[in-house]
Image (cartoon, rainbow, N blue to C red; front, top):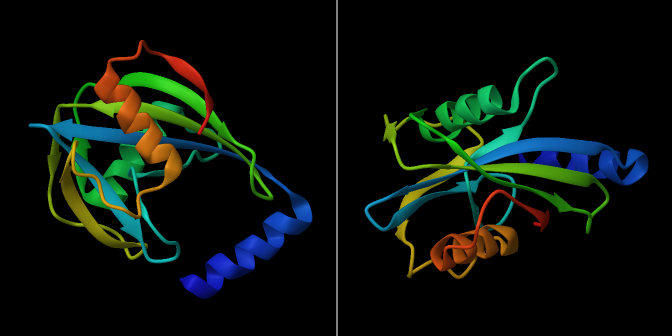
Length: 148
């Protein structure tokens, strides 16, 4: 998996594609579900790319099932964010879900799935993920947009 990710980084550097993704902040009982991927460092929200002919909501539900074995109830749009720091132009649609069930199964790209108290996040959490959790805790209005 790490070798494939390294190859993808070379491709991204050459072609500088536009990526459109969907992630979900799963929050319940003062805790948030985060994942650690096998191919990159740090903790992040479950999610991934939107496929051709797939709605953003369908994509976030599919990714939740694939990455954390999650069945989502109502999802609410938090915002649409961009990450233009690397070789790609990433656009991330973030949803919030309080009504979900996890079956304990995840795909091969997930090294670990864990609940974290919202006030005790891991040190190696992604910058955008941390920023979105801080905004959630502050009660900032939604939907929003800006830098991931």
